[in-house]
Length: 91
Image (cartoon, rainbow, N blue to C red; front, side):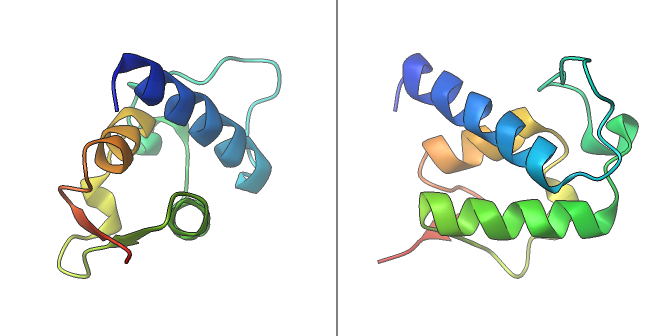
């Protein structure tokens, strides 16, 4: 996937995060490069987001890689679009 694919995934991830994040600050754009922790995303929200990403993009996260390995929406999008270096593609 090229830049267009990455941008599409980032846009979708931002939407998904807003859908699952109860504490999402309304009206403010989400910085895709900011760490999810600095944005205020808690561990439960991250786990729900990862589950939704698995379902939508047909990915599986590597159990040896903790969810904290994905520090931003950008790192999540890169993982999805570059063949899941931190997870394995579902067959």
